[in-house]
Length: 74
Image 1 (cartoon, one colour):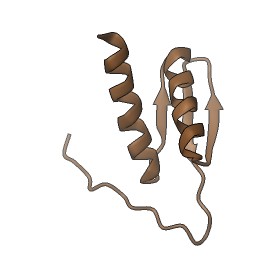
Image 2 (cartoon, rainbow, N blue to C red):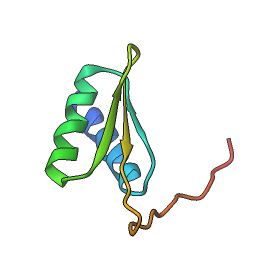
Image 3 (tube, one colour):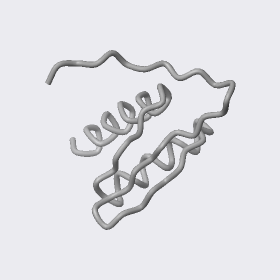
Image 4 (tube, rainbow, N blue to C red):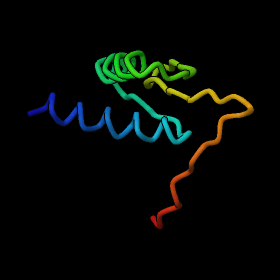
């Protein structure tokens, strides 16, 4: 069951990255799953590895339009 949950989180994070948002992986396992999906989809991202986890920041070119999600109230 945990693997299914992780895959759901990875899919959600990848979809957000496609829209120009950064994604955070709190564990090496989650970072590894994200890297595999990023590689498979050939997304261009910058990975910032910290002591607390890894950030995956989408790279954009000047001609690439980013579709942002609407803000949601907290």
